[in-house]
Image 1 (cartoon, one colour):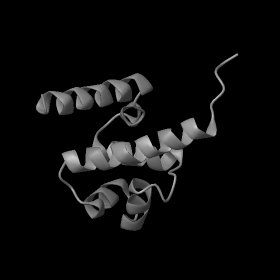
Image 2: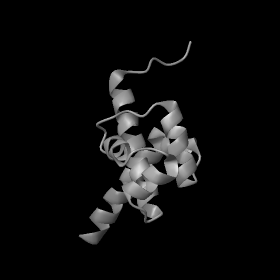
Image 3: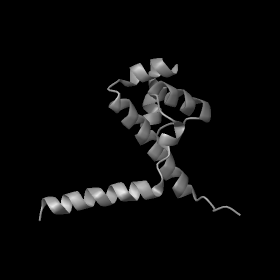
Length: 98
């Protein structure tokens, strides 16, 4: 059988998705209003998704990804990638003060 997914893992993934949507929008240098227009959503929906106040359904995620020009897979950062990024940040901080 597959691994059991814990609620904490799901909550962490939801936060990652919200953060990644915001990061991708900011990379494009567009506002929440622009993204909402491109995706056919309300600006309030985009705001609530990015802040984690609302969990988007699959249809909404796909609309956002299309509007951002990314694959849905880009929103699901593997835990190893997150750990590697955190490790790099720690190394940079330690190196800065050595």
